[in-house]
Length: 437
Picture 1 (cartoon, rainbow, N blue to C red):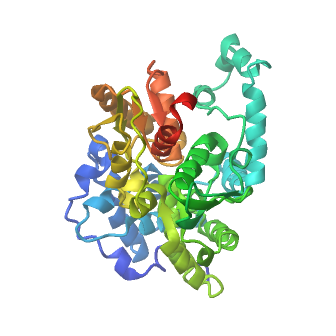
Picture 2 (cartoon, rainbow, N blue to C red; picture 1 turned 120 degrees about the vertical axis):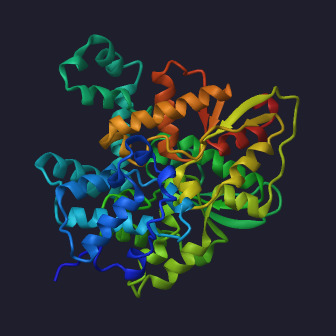
């Protein structure tokens, strides 16, 4: 008998929701539409009805599950501790099992991205190299495509996606980071560094800066040259078995007993990485190691707060006005709120200005800005207005998707002078001698 993901959940998870409605003001889709079905409470009611076999899985239900951002703001507001992330992922898995959104086009896109490209980092880097060639200024392909008007011959959505194409740096993480980075001064701990997939492809400099900061604070850092995706993309898009496969590969590559901590610097990845124990609970070969993995997995801000950092020297640097946008999954998924702010304040010349609605989703939400562009853009516009109100020259954020979403949004709004940076980049720059900044 084929498993029904929702029906096979521990029923205590399904029935936790008290329908009190405290989640409603925190939900971006409900806030905009004011429709109950677009709220966490409404979605959970649908999930429970399906788990109880009172409703079938329909296309309408499937579309609703993919209209949800999965931002987890509702979990921070919920007094009953509803595990919305588990409900949400299993609901999408059931949608995919029953193929309620299936079409030849969607099947091809999901096979290429979720089932092929992000299952092997070598494939992703190959595509990255092709994108790099497309973007080479001396070759001029991208410049010609954008200036010639050729894109006007293509559908509007394809034009929008081309404009969102991230700049691919000249070097990936393995080209920037040694496999073993010694600590500066006395060794305090030994950690492993997860470089990710999209983070490695687009923001390899953030990985380099994270390793620099760790080494500056007495950590020996192990960073394998070839790594795997964490599996969050797969779990969040209904491919739980593929997520399990990647979890096993990561545990094999980073035996948790060998490290004081396993470090992640991307909020969305970290939220998933913390739950390998739950993901592999029924796997006797990996269950114990997965549980230990969960204990060792640390977000970079959390780890630095735990071990204490060496404060950078002032060196007469001019004041830098910085605001901080919170990654949804760092804040609501991992409950890491104050540590990034404290680390930014530790930089003597940073003036941290609080961002209104700092924990409100920017619209990136994994691949949400690709599949739900209208809602994503409304959320992005709201975020950009708040950023403008702070008069900050730097927006700090700690998630790959947020980082790229804000870069693209600021660029489209003609605000390219506002820099988007990971807190680790700002901290790494503060540790460098003044002459090399």
